[in-house]
Image 1 (tube, rainbow, N blue to C red):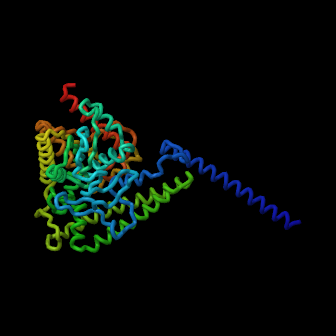
Image 2: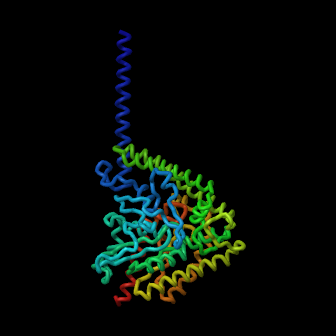
Image 3: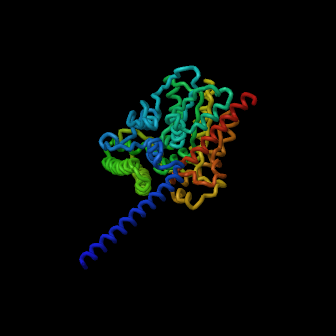
Length: 451
């Protein structure tokens, strides 16, 4: 009898434990469903899109989440005219409408793109990664892009019935005169444009400042992007090793994203999301550390061991002299783009992007302040360089350049708009920028029409 009671006790305890575990699971699943709905504004079980936002953001920015280390670990390629591009045809995401085209730029079209009918209106977007994100956000599958921008432009009488085509000529780290050189090249091979949008400012001052610190000609492409490729051309094994290590981290990130997207339960999705956030933070930190390492190693270039020629300057320029040179290069490049396009009756619009390291009236929440690192390598360049650029806006306007100062467009927004400690915006920030650009273009075009 004692044994029987003991067994019954065990069974009762096991049943109670099982019931509690089931209730706990149901409770956690319910909480996870609530969090998912609050985050995505849709029910988890009836969601239409299982592609994670992390995958979308990475692939829109040109980061391929592949597993082929031998072929894809080094995605960028030296270009004889542009400095560097992505490896042509290196990846395609049909769901997002994102791919690297025949010129190593992120676009669903190969270049030069020719109009298939006279009703098409081609907008070319030039600049760095912010411009790249802007172009890709508007063009991916059109149905998934931000239609508010397109719809806003279509309220302009001249564009009301047009089929607007967005072409991306921007890339991570691009800075003047890369935009100018690329524009001239594509015009020379017959690329048609009806409008060109140039979004820049940050790379010109932040990355050119890094060039100066390492005594590399300021107007050359960013050393943080071009230097790894030049060292690879010289068989620098340390750079190869670092790239492979980053690729392995990227593969771990890819595996985590795949598991997240395969989750059938909201609880699984919640736990995988936390794991993914940790991996993404680690990946971004490694990228930043790698950039800093590359910048430190750039002093080893003396021109004798590299197959790529990089102009060096005798000594680091004083900040006042360096930023004056940077500002003049930026001014002349934008002016040249405007004049070249004006002679062809092509609209040109130039926008200076906002950045968290240039102080405005924006008040940052504690949650957003994590994206402001006081001793960040880019901070000095922005704080000292932006005033130089902004001081030349009136001169560009007097030269009939449609230029707009966008540094204050986030000042009235209380929600978080940045997503990293560099320069990039989250969905809300991207949307604010898109609306600002659309309204600015609309005001100019309608004013010309006398409305």
